[in-house]
Image (cartoon, rainbow, N blue to C red; front, side, top):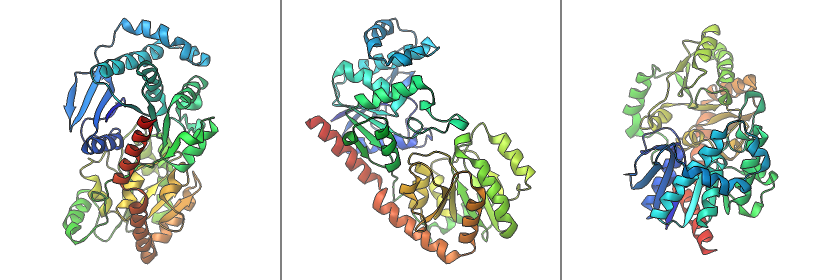
Length: 410
C-alpha cells in the first residue's frame, strides 16, 4: 500500500518537535510495511529518512501553476476568491502541482492530508487530478476557533468556505476527539465518514517512573533546578495566546501562598515569552516559575517522569499529545475543559477539569492534590490505566490502516 501524505511542516526525524505527532504516525505506518511519500511545502530535493520518502517543491516560480489555477478555479467556493492576496491561490496550486508530480513518479493508493486547510484543500485538488481516495485528519486549529484571541483558520469566511469544501470532498475524515467530530458534523459533513481516532503515544517511552529511573529523575530535577523535596508542576505548551499560560501564572500566585515547596516548569517557546516573564516578576514568582524553552524530545519522557502533576491552561485543544504523554507517564492532570481534553482527563478520576480562564479553580485543584498525596498517587495510577485503554499508538495505527483498506476496498 502506497500513501501520499500532504503535511507542510513535518520534520524528517523523531527528534524534531514541529508536527512530531504526525511524524510518529507516519514512521509507524512505514514500520507496518506501507510505503509513505510526504510532500512538504518548501523547495527541496527528494530524500529518504527513517524509511519515509520526502519530497518538496521543484521551484517556487513555476508557470505551469497558472494553467492549474484555470483548471481548478471552478472548484473554489466563490467567497474564497475574495482573498486579497493572489499568492495564496498560487501557493495552493503550486503545492498541488508538486504533489501530483510525485504521484506520477510513484503511483499511490491513498492521499492523506493533515489539517483541513491548507493541506486538506490541496488534497482535494490532488484527489480530483489522480482520482484516489482522500483522508483528512483534523487536529484543532483547522476546526476550532477562539475569536477573541484570533485563533482558528475558520474565523474568516474565505477560509471557512475552503475548510467546509475540503471536508465535504474528503472520502474519510479522522477527528482526534469526540467533541471535534461534533463540530465537524455541525459544518454539514456526513457523520458516517467521520472517524474518531485520538492522538496516541508510545506507552513504552512514556511510562510511570520505576526504580531504574531514579537516577534519571534526580539528574533531570537537578538540571532544571528542582529540589528532591519539591513538587514539580509541568506545562509543555508553546508561549502563544491560545495556550493561556498567564492563567497558570496567576494560579501559581495562589498556590504558593499555601505551598512553598513547589515549582512550575513551562517547557515551550513563543512570542509571549517576554510578557510572561514580566508577569512572573510582577507577581514575585521568579523562584517558583521557570521558563525553560523547548525541551528536546529525547528529554521529555524523563521530565514527565520527574514531575508530580501536569497542568494545562489551553483555551482550545484538539487531542494534545503533551497531555497524552502526561497521563501515559502516570501524572494526574488539572486542565481547562476545552476541545478534546475531556477524552483524556475524566473529571475526578485521573484529574480535574475546570472552566476556561478560571485561575482560581485551577489553583484550588492543584492545592487539593498537593495537600492530598494519596489522592494524587491514585489519580496518577488512573491516568496510566486510561492511557493503556485509549491512547496506545499501536492501536491508533491499527485503526488508520483499517480505514485505508476500507477506502481502497470501496
